Length: 431
Image 1: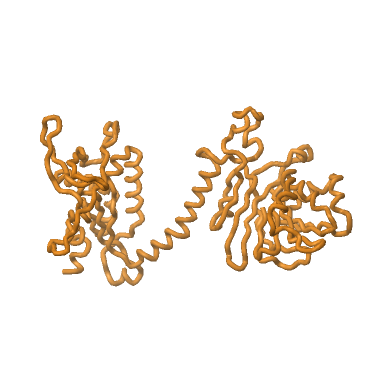
Image 2: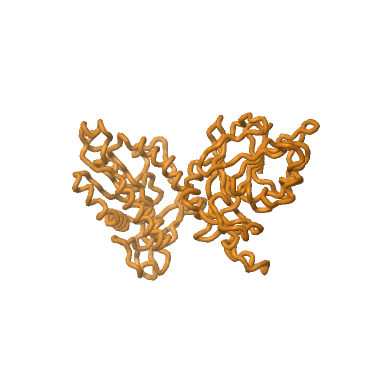
C-alpha cells in the first residue's frame, strides 16, 4: 500500500516480496528520470518477512528512508547478512524511529515534510518466527498506523496484522475517514478446516474477521459508538435544546410480527428514549437554560391496519409499554400520553366471515394490487405478550395504498387520531 498527499511523493506502508510487481503495476511509483524514484520512504509495521523482504529489492544506488520502531529496526538489521546489500554506500538507508503514541511528520531523504503525519499504535501481535528464539515479545514488535493529512485533517487507519482490538486500537480508529484492517483469516479454524495446517488464526496473532468476537463485529461496534458520539449526540443536542414537546412514533405492529426478540428490543428502545428525556414543566427560566420536556406523546403507527376495536387495543398496548418508564415524568409534573395513529388513513373498517364467525376487518387496496381486499389482522394484545404468545408470527401486514385525495374535498386528508395528537401536544399553546 502507498500513500501520498500530493500524488508526487509516495510512502510505502511495508515492503512485501512482491514490491517490484507492485511498483510496475502503478504508474505513480514509476521513475521519472534516471536514478529517480517517487518513493520517499517506507514505513514498517512489524518485522515479518512478508513486510520487510521487499527492502532488499530496493538496493540500487538510491538512498532510502525507513520508518520503524527500534525493535523492528534491530530485528531486521542485527545479525542479518543480507542487510549488507543496503549498505553499498554511506547513508544508503536512513532509519527514523517511531515512538508509540507520538505523531511524527513523514519526510523524505531531503527532510522536506510531505503533508502527512503518522502515529504508531501498539497492536496485539507476536515476534516474527525467525526472531522468536531471541527473546520475549514487546509492544513495539507490531504496530498499526494512524495517518493524518495536514491540509484536510482527514485520517486513515492502517492495521495490517492484528491479534485483537484493544482500547488503544479503538481510540486510534475513532474519527478516521478510512480503515484498512487485518483480513488474513475469516474464521479461526480456516487453515485446519481446509487441511492446510494445524495453527488457528489466533496462534499466528491474527484476529478472524467473522464471528461474534471477530474484527468485523468489533470494528462495527467501534464505528457505531463514534457515529453516536460525533453525529447523533451533537445533532440531538442542537435539535432538542429548545424543544419542550415530543412525539415518538412506534411501529408496534411490526415488532409484534417480527417476534419476541424484536418486541423486547423495541421495549428497551422506548425505555432508553424516556431515560434520555429531561422532564419538567414549561417556564421562562428553564427556557433560558435549555427546555425541558413537559409533554410526550407515544403514538403507535399504522392504526389503519387494524379495525376500530383493535385500535383501542393498540393504544392500550403502547400505553402499557411506557407506563413504568414514565413514572419519572409524573414526578416532574410532565404529561405523557399514548395514542394509535395514522397520519393518512389507507383503509376503512368492515366485517368478514372466517370459519363461520363474523369478525372485524379492514378493507383497502394493497400497494401494486388491482382490487381491494378484506384483511383480518388478528387480536392485538393490550399488554406486553407472555412467552407463550410467540409460537408463530402475529400476522403479515400488507402495505396499503393511500386513497386518492380529491382537490374539491372539504374534509381534508383522512386520518386516525391526528387531531387528537395535535390537541395533546399544542392545544394549550394554540388556545
